Length: 323
Ligand code: PEP
Ligand code: MG
Image (cartoon, rainbow, N blue to C red; front, side, top):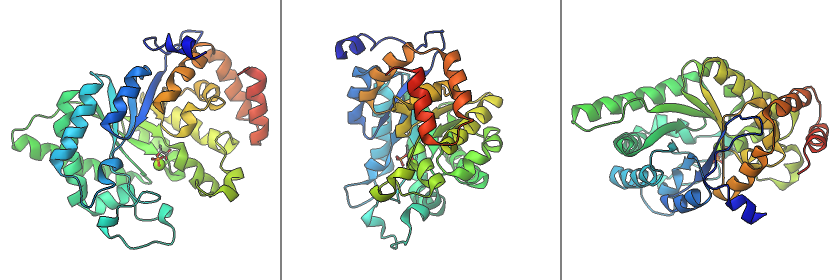
């Protein structure tokens, strides 16, 4: 089977009825690029930049960041690279920031919330990204966006840094797409409003599931609630994809669910445009998708959206697809 998948490295991801989707990879450092290329990734759908900030005792400089972003953009040779700005907090701590301990770190001061407050951390990252943009096909994504106001503020800071760079005579690419992670239910619920202002969505199901179900993504005791195929999650995913398409934007997914064999047929049916997963899952997913018909998956998705429990959903998928 592995040998069969290997033949798909340079193939496009096209369904049996001719619909193309993009299979992208999640990476944490420029070193991960090798795996992306070897596994035929069509893009980087999520570059988690927090690893640049971790396992050290001070913030990375703008220059260090520029070097890392440039390496990834060049390594992908013009294919899209979605870089997520700093998503620290929750399970990812930075001891040198000396942030106060919180009762509920996952619900606290993290990611874009921290970046909007501490511009001395946020601005160098945005400058590094803008400077690197001339080396490839960069898209910038903000994590943990809960309100339109947060997005607008983050965008304004980005535009401000773009102006600063222009005044300094430093080149920045034109038309860099700007998107958000949809990983907080409030954002999924008003995705129609966001879709008017962002260029794309990437659904972060790892967090979206935990916030929707009120179940800690790392707590085994409540893992029965942490279900990607639950009707509530599927309906939210549908709302986000539909909202994007209505405004002519694209919707991707970079949570674990995007690489899950049971979820992929449903996501295809719901119209997801980009699936971003660990590089080692790409060829298997491509092989699966090439055997599926988009129109059949649309029927399946429509059917499961009327269901009330996770068990029914999984049963319906299994009855349609023989994995
Ligand atoms: C997510 O929340 O789904 C996601 C991709 O981000 P992370 O796992 O880094 O929180
Ligand atoms: Mg997340």
